[in-house]
Structure formats: structure tokens, C-alpha cells
Length: 326
Image 1 (cartoon, helix red, strand yellow):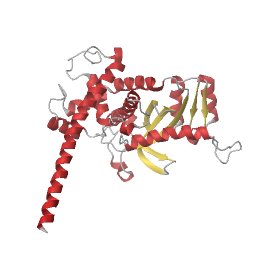
Image 2 (cartoon, one colour):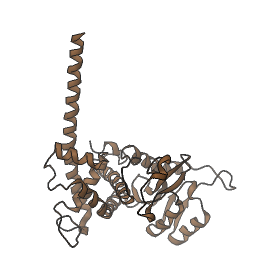
Image 3 (tube, one colour):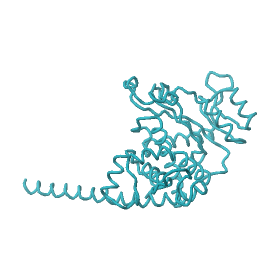
Image 4 (cartoon, one colour):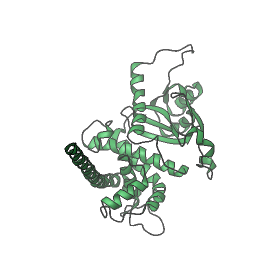
């Protein structure tokens, strides 16, 4: 009996030591990928930043550049690290000095919001490099809850920013009411997100199409039944020569079964949303203010596009984002 207990203690000690060594290797791998992502950000930022990697502005020049903030945010989301406190504790304890001039967690939180537009501009350039010649897109929306329904009346998010406050909404595909926001996305048939937006949950999906018609033209957009509207379809076609392909409902006269091509291309954006939930933890966030939530969502989408670009560089299918960092 004592021999078995002794062997089990040795085994548990080996398991713990292996886990610790894995953590150390992972953090050094984190720093390596951060440097690689920083080089990619420099490549696609072009003239948006100066030679030090900062957006030109008055005041003190930061030693930890804006590009480094963007790259650190993307790297953290790519590794599914969505807690800033957890990230900085591991960096400072396991890899001190590996990232020169590393700022504090409070500074990172503030500058992450300020550099959100720079990160989105870089993401759009990467998306264009992935598949810039597409003319068939899928459009859909996804619920983003900020709290459980029972806590909605006590939620403080948006109390000091009514314009961007969350709201109650209904998700027909999941048959649920929720309190929060709605992510609208337009992706190509290869799975690259070309544009997206965040709105309150009570905003109808058709409202996002008003922005799409000024950004795209001469293309086909595949939507679900939530985008069914004859006036909107006509307006898109007359304004930007956009064909909005939406299946009819069962109780409509012109109903026909969806084609195989439609179902295949529509499944692509549903797969993208599943990957954002599974690998990038979009359903889990710790933001206390709308600006923080929007910055986190922008970083997750940018990390998703960056992982696709990693797969492209390594000659892999770009959709396998979970294995892109290996």
C-alpha cells in the first residue's frame, strides 16, 4: 500500500513539473509569435505609422509603440488569453524583459482602445491580401451577451454612455432572448471577414446593409431569412449593383428549396462564428464599458484574420485557425 502511494506521489509530481515546463515553453512561444505578428503588422501598416511604429500625434512619444500594442492585443487573443491581468502576470513572472519597454496593464488597457482603429485598418489590409478579388459574400449576425438575463437590470455597462448601451434582443436561430449587442459580419466564401460592425441587440439586421451598399458594389450577398425585404433588395441593386440572395419563407408563393451552392456558401459564415466562439472565446468577455467590449471584439476579429494569414504563409488551409500557431 505504501509503495503504491509512493508511486502515485512520484507520478503526480512528474505531471505537475511537466505542466510547469509546458507553461514556460508556451510563454516563450507567445513572445516568439508576438514578434512575428509585429513584423506582419509593420508590413501592412505602411504609411499609417512613423518610423517608431506610432501614429503621428502631439505629446510624449511612447517607447512601447502603437504597433506593439496592436500586436500584443492580437497575440493574446490568438492564444485565447482574454484576461489582461492573467497575461501581464505571466509575462512579468515567466518572461521578464523578453518584450522590451513593456507597459503596465492599466496603460495597455487604455492604449488598446485608442489603437483600435489602427488595428482594424491593418486587419482590412490583411483580409484584402487573403482574398481581395471576391464577388460573393455571406452576411449574418451573432448575439454577444454581456450578462445573464437575470442580471440585466443590474448591469452597469452603458450607464454613462447611453448612445452605445446594450439592449434586449431576440435570436431566432437559438430561440432565446438576451441582453447585450449584436455582431454583424460580411465574409467571403473562403471564410475571410471583410467587414463587421457592433450594434445594440435590438437593431435589425437590415440596418447593417445600409453601410454595406457604400463599401461594396457589383457583387452577390447571401443572407438568411432575416434579410428578406423586397425594397432593400431593390435599393441595393439600383444603388451599387448588389444582388441580395435570400431564400423565401415557406408560406410565400415563390418559395423554392435553397440550392446546394447557397447552403454551402452560407455554411461558411456559420463556421466562422463557431470558430470565434470556440477558439477566440467571443462569448466570454470581462469588459466593464462598451468601449472596452468593442476593443476586445475588434482584437478577436483581427486575431482571427491574422491566424488565417499564418496559415496562408505556411501553405495550409486558411480555415484551420486552431492549428495556425503550431
